View 1 (tube, rainbow, N blue to C red):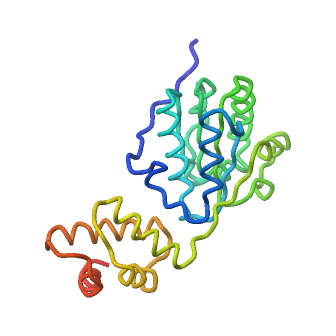
View 2 (spheres, helix red, strand yellow):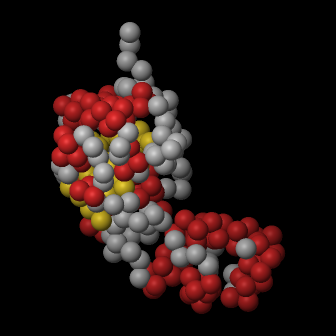
Length: 233
């Protein structure tokens, strides 16, 4: 019987390296790009709290891999209670690049741990590239299978850095420009003080503000931002 190949995943068009606000994470971007062009590590593990952009970076790696004519696959393991059938890994060893998001969620699931261990060994034997992400560092993930715990520590481990308040404001201005509009530093600071500070929530707010700005044909001044959010958030 032929090996199962996983269904293709949908690229998020707005999650490329060009759309990522780098902040203090220039070194991480460089290591990821070196991995993809064959001059860096074969395996990279990225960790950091939710909302720092791990998923964005893994998607960006897949975008760039495709530009290098490499077969790439992204899979997010959202939570330990909603893991897909581990059979989804069947055939992934054939991909030049595999990016697995939230890998910590397989910890304690014996079938997933063993299946991933088997995939890991086969994929690595082909000299293919593996990029993993988690909310915590590899040694703190409660993997039961000892050999798998060891393998998670192979390669290069990188921690995403928090954005300072000024970095977060700059990130908002940067993201707004990517979306095709402008937001003032004053309005950006207002959003940080009065609303959630994680990037995913802030990007969602920017989408709301963008639509309102287009509908009203007005610039995103601080008074206009306050007026919009009074009625939408």
